[in-house]
Every structure is written in structure tokens, then in C-alpha cells.
Image (cartoon, rainbow, N blue to C red; front, side, top):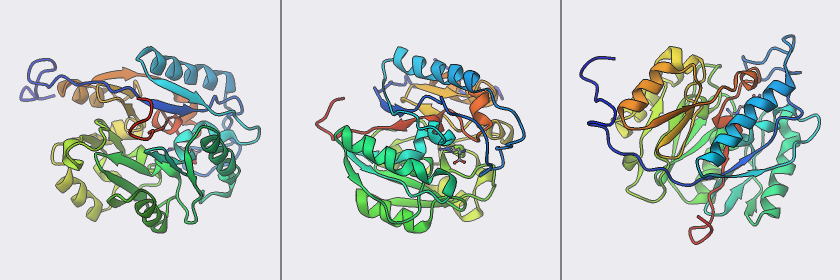
Length: 295
Ligand code: ARG
């Protein structure tokens, strides 16, 4: 870090935590028995008990910091269901279901839509291929949408139509970063205030094609650019409440960058779940209620 960087607590603004409501799924059936991303090696043994223990740490930490966590029952033979970010995309009480590109996960589509319906959300059944909050990130009033590996541009159009918001399509080019939430972290997921520029993001430039890098640089001139090393340990697969940023303990430079801007990094180690190609954000789906709903 150069001496020109702001010192945490001095020049950095005081960050305010907002209470979040998340959906998680205990990884009781977690294992790696197929490979649908470069992280997954079925020959390598996985430890389900360790995955559950690490996941529990994330769950407990969310509760300890005042967040609400809902649980969906894990389904046998759906080992990737722990990655609830891929279960849908939820804004203002409307839950758009997912339509996976990969056959291995299509069995999750129905259980997630049923959970949303049973919990009072208006469910929209999708027609185009898209993998939910893994590829859609709400930033201010706009939605950043990833494509290149999983979600289709048709899925982006559908999201724009369902939620009536601006959708900014971004193309991912590195197969290790196959979902948008592996390459961008939303730090200030504030809704409805000041548009995109009011919100801060962190991202890994090398994960995007040139056109998308330009869009990101223009739209988010103040964004944190994360090093390739921190990207490679899934540092960007992080959740944030606007103050606490839940990140991999291995993303040490990113933690420093966050501190310099007044955020509080909260390290959570999900190394076992990384064997499936997922991290903190993948295990976390945000449930955004209707504006007049419980907050
Ligand atoms: N094995 C899962 C898959 O490849 C991991 C999903 C990670 N989820 C995420 N939101 N990035 O689909």
C-alpha cells in the first residue's frame, strides 16, 4: 500500500450497516461429483462435515451482526444447492426463478420457486437461461448482468422486463470467473438512492472483455480494483451490508483496500465450498422485500 492511500478511520467515511435478509441452504449433501466449472475436480475428495462447519460460521456471523437468514431445505442429489445465489433474483417482493444453463442443476429450479411462493413472494417463472443472483447484481437502481458462460443475453432482457430497471450487460471472459458474483462485489447495496453512482463496487478488471472494462471504468470511477491474486482466491465473491464485508481470509490486499475506505472486512473461510467453485456470495441470496415490508 502506498502512503498516499487514505488511512482507515481518518479520511475514510463512516460506513453504515443495513439489515439484510438472506436465503441460505445448509450443505448437507455437498460433494463434487461432476464438473461444471474449472474449480470442480470430482477425483478430489470433499469433506461434507467440514463444508457444513464452515457454512455454519458464515450463517452464525450474519446473525451475530443483526441480519436475518432464512433456510431452504437441502435436497439429496443436488450437491450445488448450497449456492443459493443461483436460486433466483429477488427485488421488491418479486422473485424471478432461474433457468440453469447446466443440466446438473436444473433440479434446483422448482424447489427454489416453491420456497419463494411459500414465503409470500410473487414468483415469475423464467423462460430464458439465467442463473439468478450469481449473474445479476443490484447496484443502486440498476442491475449489473453477467454473460459469457452461464446467463444468456435473453436472460438479461427478461430481467430488465420483469423488474423494469436498467440492465448493464457485462461479458465475462475467464472461465474461472464464470458468474458475475465471482468478479464483482457490491459494497453499498443501497436501493433507490442516487442511482448507480451512489453505490460502490469492487471488481477484477481481467475477468471482463475490453468493452465491459470500459463500461465499468466509466460507471464506477471510484470502484476498488482488486488484484489478480485476490481475485484468484475468490476474494470478490463477497457479501456486504454496507459496512461489514464478508470476504475470504485469503484476500488480504482486498481487505486492506476495504479498510482504507472505512469498510470492516469480516473474514470467513469457505475453502471446502470453493472445491465446488463457490464462496461466500454464492452461498447467499438476498431477499429484498416489498418497500413497505419488514425491514
Ligand atoms: N458448482 C456451482 C456451479 O458451477 C457453483 C456455483 C457458484 N455460485 C455463484 N453464485 N457463483 O454452478
